[in-house]
Length: 120
Image 1 (cartoon, rainbow, N blue to C red):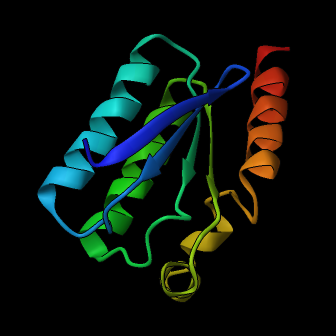
Image 2: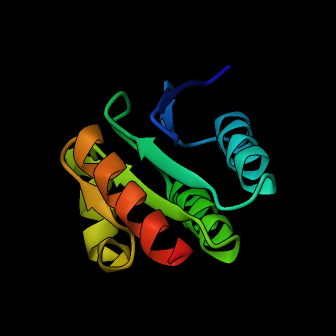
């Protein structure tokens, strides 16, 4: 498996172990997001703290994961984005639409708040 999976309260935290550059890691991570989303109202944080690079395929996969969560009335955030990945998100202006936080804890709190607001 190319990522680690954990839970903080009701939020799924997915942590890639390989740079998001190829088919295998992107498909596995997207598959995990789809699995969680299939249960309805997904609450997902992608922790990027263990990788240092994502190419256009990897960035596209992150956008797809966010879209999957939003389409299923869930909440999504990125955490611990390394500089090279953040630079790409800034240049493409995706940083403006992808909730991102310095720590996993901040991202989890945001996801919980967003999910609660959508449930109300």
